[in-house]
Length: 447
Image 1: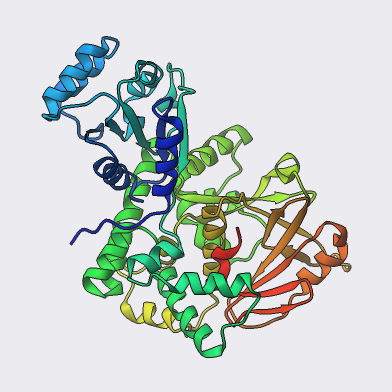
Image 2: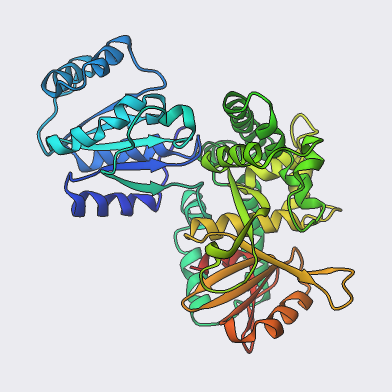
């Protein structure tokens, strides 16, 4: 059973429609299989009298002939209506260009389509900045761009029928209130379920159909295979695919940066590596966290491009990739992860979900390391958030331990720059002075 899930981006789409009133197209960019096409068509059905959805991944020959003559707009619109057997009404219809990266000429024509003003336009796409998708075209400035991500924890809760749980969690966070051990344990169990399934709509849909995590795992493997195929197409050397596959193992090693030479077997030129990383980032399948050389306001101006960590954009996919050595991740492994009893360090899974959540909330990711007084080891802050003129350090733990040596050292080193400090862990909410012990399921409250 295919379901239409409630997504937050819908409200942003409504705002675009009411405020722009056809003066720009709407470009929804994101990784493949996160629901871009679904939300575009759902919006078109609900908010317009009629719509045409042009899927450039599977378009009829007649459509490509129409694109060849797109400069003649009267004829282009006539052909579209004939091909799709849909009547368009001026200012009451929308045309969806799905997988727009596969037809650069259509994207370039957005400037003239918007200027014409008869209809609204929604574009969806991934890998939008890859050189072959932008070569020889002028990128239109008449685009309002929205980034779409996998379903976040609130959207996941809505999908499984819990419409009030996250509201209560947000209320507790806003009021600096604990929930009590029993409720906190239940919330953590629910949150671990989200971590295992992830936010890919197909995976959530399979879970609701089967209540079987091995079946969910099969769906996630199909998505990962699709991503890896994409990487092979944009980088035939295999570097992008290798870097992507190695994200869990690199994080498990607990190093202060992603070691590309350990994965690729040799040192690549800066130009080559930059191009590969750009492709990975543009795919929106990964979240890159850069090292902040000088933590404070304006971190992007002083970040270190050569020092970074990588996380998967979806933690459900991350879990499957971490157990890629098995053909299907057995339900036993999932059940142990769900009950937090798997006999291995899974701290990196919690790091990944925190990274995913912070990005979904509009944050750019930064971390910071510096040597201990002995010089033999390093302190590390997992994430740094801008908060007005201050910053908020975030340390992530996969347990209920309340030790925070790095946070203490960071607060002493940069005391004048800090507003709040957060230790994300697996127990109930607590607050001690300017330090907040934040249960992982409350991470979405960090805006």
